Length: 167
Image (cartoon, rainbow, N blue to C red):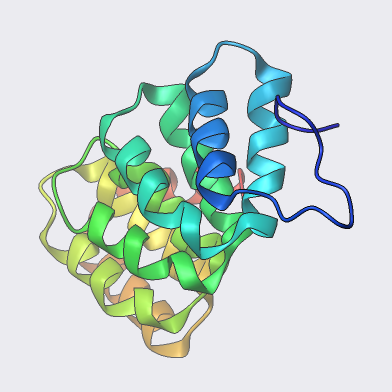
């Protein structure tokens, strides 16, 4: 299965810009299978897809934003700077970006996630940042979550336990 157009053979070199355009278009489509295929392809495209997905995280509808976050997880460590840039701003893609950073598990995300945990006025953002820090598993990040649990009420702890159930 491939995203539109014709599949590249062993002798053909795919057009990365064309693949990126198709992937972004698929994330904005209403076709769930097309979206899932695009998410799957993101890892094989790699770095060229990162900043176009950053735009989707910031400008797309909720489904497209989550699709972009899932695709960036497939890209892995090279996508971390994009994710940090997204969740460090007041972007509508902040929550999916924090979730994706937790899934990737790169230590560079720990300090920016800690800032969200300590400074955000949005409880849900603090909870997602805490879950991402726990997912990364870095000792410094986990210690900061423990500190935050001591500083917040029981509602924060219950919310964190609930969101952690979703992985």
